[in-house]
Image (cartoon, rainbow over all chains, first blue to last red; front, side):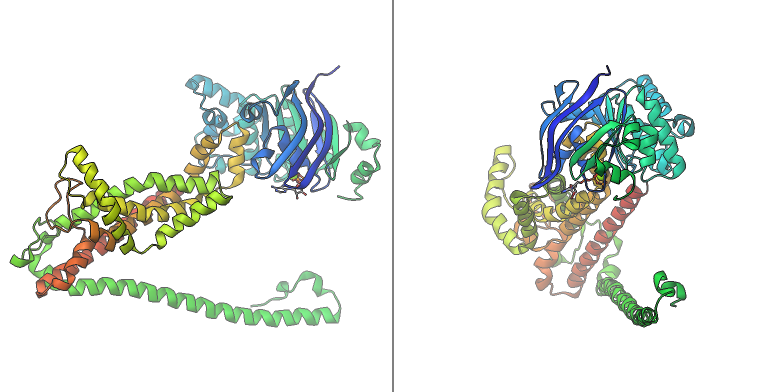
Length: 252
Length: 320
Ligand SMILES: Nc1ncnc2c1ncn2[C@@H]1O[C@H](COP(=O)(O)OP(=O)(O)OP(=O)(O)O)[C@@H](O)[C@H]1O
Ligand SMILES: [Mg+2]
């Protein structure tokens, strides 16, 4: 049996009176890639941001229900520890524009006031950039600003920044939707590499991408988790006809 | 010019009515272009008027102070004595007074204005307390300067006097220090409101990036918000410095109005603006009047130079 890293039960989220995520129950297995799909506005981003408690940063946003990381209640932990254990990569590449590539990678350590000896820092930077297949491209320009990189490189830099913190899970919100096809496939290849050490949850509108990279797929519809199964089954033999309609393109 | 490609594509292969509609739209576009030209010319003229106005003021000041410039020469600027009765005119005490009060006011006000800017821009952008604070700060800028002068004389100066006797300097009350305090209050809104709007412009995706890495709010402010807005905050501080340099009424009322060089920051003195305000009506000799106007010219130039330096620094900040 595979072990469960994240478990939510009857999880709900709202923006004020707008009930956006409804009664979500899900078990996410360790070292797997989970794709989250569903029509626009169905609550994918909101649910994802509930996992690492980014949701509560928005004024008026509330949530309730059970969310457990390794049997520990995420909502009983300090949000900062939650975010250190569950990293996040956003839709638009967002490296810190005033920091160099090097400083972007270790930004998490700097932000958290963790002082490391230079050698250790160098090691983290090299390892993280290697993991995201960016080391070769940038190793001679580590002191340049992160914003000089291409969009795809910037996104990999953002992944490196997250990986550098050695989280257990990484959440991706449409990580390739702002990227060109070549950068997209580079990032997709990366997912396979990262799976060995991390559990990945990836929100995507791209069905081919979900089919290519994920082990399991969750389908959200109007705030509900309609269906959650092995990706193969979801794409060949979905049980719910809302899922069926979505993957056959009857609504989007 | 309107070309075929400006007509919406879907109209090209469609019905006669649609084409007619598109043509109408094209006609309207010509009108829009004409309006656009008028608009542009109006803007240019308005801009030119402003430039002429500023140059005109400077030339007037220079022309009116020609008598003082020719008889007193450049040493006017660093001569330490101002005694109109004996026709001795040295601007140094007032230059010093202006710079002292303004920079002291700046030092006192910056912690407040930056805190207010951060509080309103990042910590608490919405709610009744921030709304109240925002209005209060804006009100500070709207209160007439003479009211500040009164308030300072009635309320502030007695406290300053107590403070002075407590630390063992001559308890005059009025002087550089009191002026700086009241100036500090008056200039807070300028840096605070510009800073607030700069801070609220920090892209949320950058702040979220930091939060997602486990940063606390203070860490986000320190490492994302402040670096991102440093030039804006600086511009606001500069704006308030410009305001402090020229502020006249309140300062004139509490600075003590002596033409002696202030011995320390608690001593009475005069700023360039306060001397002009105080002595303009008494200036019965042409040289005296001209020397006062030259003081105005110097004040004008000091303000311009400080603004230029500030612009340079902002450029440096934003280009790296
Ligand atoms: N910051 C916010 N404030 C208020 N309501 C919000 C906010 N963000 C999202 N919502 C509401 O929550 C609902 C779900 O939004 P969410 O962003 O989770 O959808 P999504 O599935 O990620 O959509 P998309 O595929 O377009 O990214 C939407 O109906 C939206 O109106
Ligand atoms: Mg979304």
